[in-house]
Length: 170
Image (cartoon, rainbow, N blue to C red; front, side, top):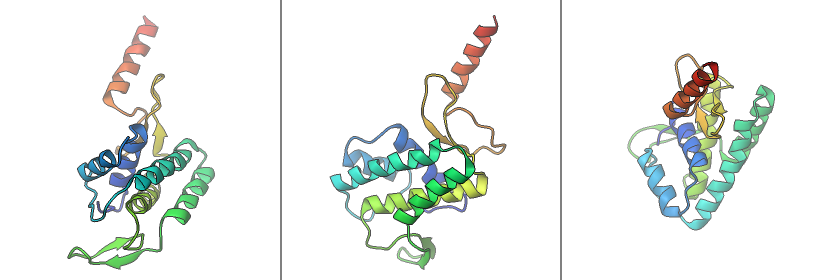
């Protein structure tokens, strides 16, 4: 997966994995592959454990709504999980990596999620990562909408909340 200038793909994958935690290494690899992650190394149960632990730390960024606190939490993840950017052409075209080439699968993911989240929040807005506003949902979403007013993780939660509001009025 290439990190586009807006970070939408990595932050969306991180949210998906945080919402529906993979139970096996195979599930983690399959879901990453389905999301466009180039998998050029093996993955182990340790990679799964490390990725799940990272997602717990990443949720601190999600749940910290005050901008300075959110930035501090994300800066800590960037310091722990990414490296200075560098150019590489290992697959035939030039692009930027924020990690060393020989890192584990978990480290590849955590660097991608950290940098992708930073790009998303700086390009779209520091508040564009949240929990669903539906009463009975705690899922995370990255707001990639044009107007930046997304409140719900899915159309289903949006519709259920609208029905609840309508019924409460009548």
